[in-house]
Length: 358
Image (cartoon, rainbow, N blue to C red; front, side):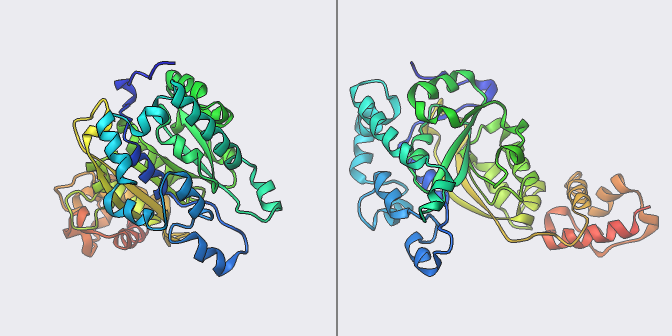
């Protein structure tokens, strides 16, 4: 099957750089070994992956220092990168094209890796091994990121893909993945029904729905402990910005209320087909341990949205436009602008609104 044609209506910009795909894959933590204690912690390392050493080897990194080289240099194996630049594709195109003789060999290796990685969690637990966590890739495209996720033994990879052409391509090139590939709109999926034990989310998110994806994550924050996504750089900056910045906004406050946000790295336009007109970035969200905010959380969302509704005006005017004049009552934050308030400030403001609105 020939390569998939990118569709503007779906916001598709296919990632073609394998080194970037590896970095995104490695940014996601993996499953845990129940009851393994400190010994498991020592083996898993900082990212929490129960089989980090094996995953590193399978992903094509050599030696114990490879992961550090990946994080520092932004790519793995300098020789592979040189071959990528010289030939226009990594590993002679075998992993991305999957159509020639070399690609068939790569598929065979990938199928073997995936068969081992796809064992049910219950069976893994019975054997006392690592319990893979469920991971959903949103927008699998032609599987450039998918292929590395499938090689990891500490996760069970699922996919959500709305484009029928991409679904057909993935079925043809990753047949072992087909049973876990969900054709449909991620934004309309009932994650609680499909993943009652929870899931992590990853992907090269379509530009036109990236904010909606994060709102979906927020709605399911009790199910989603981690999310790694490649999105437009300006959106990534906005999400990660602290109070006081002009980029700080609604999504910044809401996500930072329940997640720790890390801006991982910037991605140039040239690693996509077709190249977008803007730079991209990869960010990671990890649940911050906040169970309840200590206020009416539905009202909290309304207060945050109302406060940023008129960014150039003081909060007094923004809130009165939505909630009324509060009987003339004033709050100390009323003379500030929304971008000056922290999450804790908005929690305090929400309690005040709840007590004073008519």
